Length: 519
Image 1 (tube, rainbow, N blue to C red):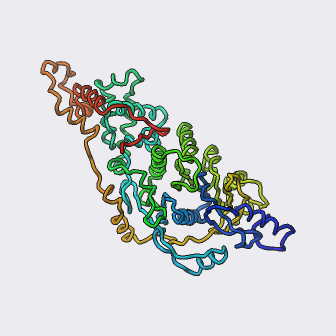
Image 2 (cartoon, helix red, strand yellow; image 1 turned 60 degrees about the vertical axis):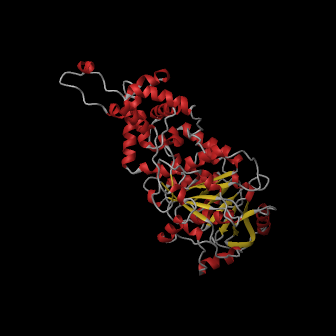
Image 3 (tube, rainbow, N blue to C red; image 1 turned 180 degrees about the vertical axis):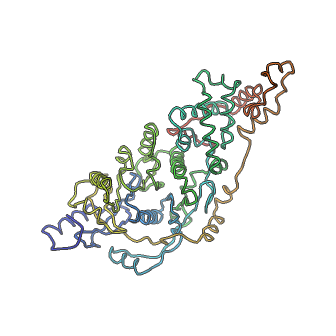
């Protein structure tokens, strides 16, 4: 049954509407998405909702550019906050900062509210604004190299499998010796040592690190830093527990990661989002099924995470998404079409909000047919419907309170009650300075770590005896290499043993190679 222009009401139409409406008539707490569309009419008497306890069963918000995905995120985030659930939003375009301010009751908003049966009230919500490395308007979010880990870092650097394994060896060595990798210069220093004549034996029992591969890693790190990436790694490291806060009035805090300043580094921010999720996975206890999620995490531009990913990386994502549900975290992937998300991940996304798709090319047509196949059987002609939806309309199916899929429902979505657009930059900066997190994270700290320890060791090393001078090649003594300038190899082994003894054991790493921080 098409949701196109209204015509004569077909026999049984009221029964179809009643059956769909019954599928969304939940008894417990739920979020209101909008009203059912049927035969071109908006049926305010048939509300489409999603049960609050099912938000940790994950979801997908998809649709072509300009179809209203961002407003859908805003609508869901508002209602979660109102029910005491913290929310994390990745704001790629800078459109979501308005969630902190009451919306404007214009003619379009009033018209939409009337159509869908919404009692619309202009409302702002408690929000925290974050920014990767402090680039942009927000409290700086940083990670140490140690906690970020080799797998995610390899993804950012574009390393192949062999290079990723070699980077893992560098992390393994630093972990076992207690050499903290806080920033990029720490990692470079340890990598340089392990490819030197003095350092190479340190890894001989586990395969070693080839000079060529180490050279690729070092060049990648240098290029990465030259692009301004150094600010993202360092201390103080962001504590993801700060994403789980509620406001004094009991509403959940909406943490908005402002990303416009790093739009030209999409792989970096998508991988950083995965680090945040992996860190939450580390720290949160198992809670099983609960009456509400602890956090709902919206992962925008999700296709960037999966593009070019290795099978091992995809397996880690799949397992993290599957297991984090029992820790009370819901993850919504936001992208253009379901085919952007691997099938193993897509199969775990129980809640679906599909905005309009375009079908201008054969590839578009193929994507459209693939999308239709991911929905339960319905009375709609979904191929026709999905290309005819207007802005702010979507095809919805969610998990009911007993975990079964609800009937497919074409839906006219409600209007957000907060400001649909960005707030002024000066206002945003003022909000950031007033944040309780600003004092904790604003100022970067560069404490002693691997690089400084190696530098200090070299400075303390005795000078080589003059008798060794004949070992220099003909034509004069070689200039000290970069490695020799950074490390004093004779003392380094003693230092490494000492540090390894004093600071203890190898760091335990998760599926993504991320490390649990000391808190």
